[in-house]
Length: 112
Image (tube, rainbow, N blue to C red; front, side, top):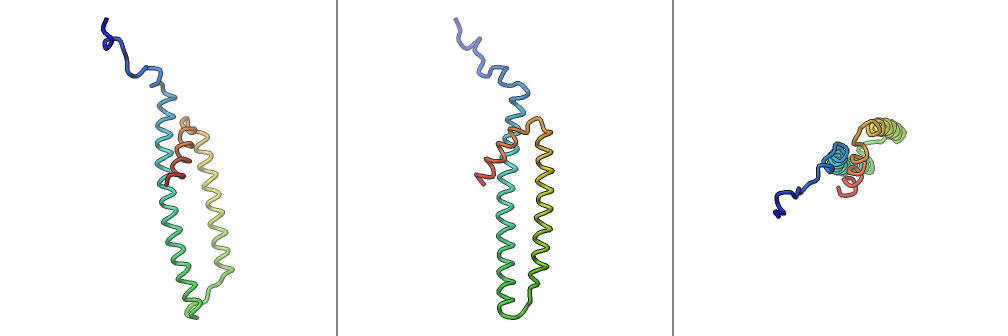
């Protein structure tokens, strides 16, 4: 009796399309989440440094900041971010590997 001849290391049932899609979606979601978090950290750092620089210049009397216009700009940017969130939600709902992608995205955001 030969053990190695009839033993398969990976059963074919594990390679079915839903499992593959979950794995690919999970890996893709992790990569996207990790990248989004790293990019967001970089953008926030640059914006914070710029804002602190403007505050310093305003404190010294070199520039004057229109805070109402700044608030309007921030509110319009938040509205655009909400629209992007809706588009991502719709995309994930229609993708066959959306569950794996969503789980990977959350893990990537936590890890990044």
